[in-house]
Amino acid sequence: MIEFVDVTKAYEQGSAALDGVSFRVDKGEFVFVVGPSGAGKSTLVKLVYREEIPSDGHVMVNGRNVSRLKRSAVPFLRRGIGVVFQDFRLLPRMTVADNIAFVLEAVETPVREVKRRVSWALELVGLPHKANSFPAQLSGGEQQRVAVARAVVNSPAIILADEPTGNLDPDTAVGIFNLLAEVNSMGATVVVATHAHSIVNAMHRRTIFLEKGRLVRDVAAGGALR
Ligand SMILES: Nc1ncnc2c1ncn2[C@@H]1O[C@H](COP(=O)(O)OP(=O)(O)OP(=O)(O)O)[C@@H](O)[C@H]1O
Ligand SMILES: [Mg+2]
Image (cartoon, rainbow, N blue to C red; front, side, top):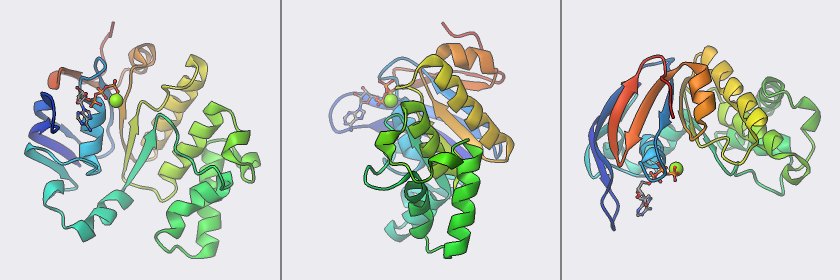
């Protein structure tokens, strides 16, 4: 589903953000990516949805080399990937329902289907009563649940989350991770870059450890992090 083959990413300035990284994530897996600040976690995530392209090696998503995609094919790649960011990135002037529906309207889904899917996504994240609220009227945890709803609304095969609980208190963070695990149990492949070590330890999932751009460990059932 996702494969990195000897991937190096050097930004214009500075040393390599990723250095010779190889791993494969199969369909339906749930994988944490951990490591100190600057280790390359966000870079890894960005390479999957082609926000960045590798300097060397290649990134395969669904059997296709993402560096070789034509510009016109990039939206198709991204339609199959839902992304959750640390800072939620909801549109402030749109209601919760419209923030979620926006994704579907961009791909010209029929109105009835949009309504059905938005209701389903809001139900999934436990916020059907907030459909007509604006983001600023929600708590941080609620905003992030809306961001998860938006990421899953068109049932993408892959969900990426980059530090999705970085701005949340620990209890709220556990709720977001459980939600991502639930989405995974429904069939999505989920990759989560995070600093939330205590939660990673508690969840016993595959964990990829980055250090200074190198993949230093890849543990099947998660390991005790410090
Ligand atoms: N757009 C960019 N231009 C230049 N250097 C960058 C850029 N983005 C990231 N870097 C550098 O690449 C390295 C890896 O950054 P990255 O954001 O992937 O780390 P990270 O593991 O996500 O860190 P954090 O935990 O702080 O989010 C860092 O040294 C960073 O300074
Ligand atoms: Mg980061």
